[in-house]
Image (cartoon, rainbow, N blue to C red; front, side, top):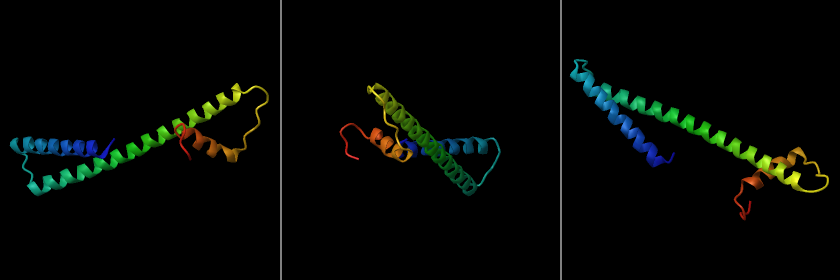
Length: 108
């Protein structure tokens, strides 16, 4: 998620918390403005922290999926070559994955 959308969502969460605080105060649950501000700030930080962890997890899973696709594409390409396919040394695998992850025509 881009930073602008993330900032807009966090702003909406802050506004929602203000509404909830206003409703609570109107029902007789009085909370000092300073306390409400501190709670709102703390919740915003916790939401941003959780969101950051989730985004990191999602990005890592997407990277793993791209690597699997690259390896499968390499296997398919090797299977389409007639004759015996030479073995690939384990230390060559990262370079092969990197080559498949580049857009066509890009230089690594």
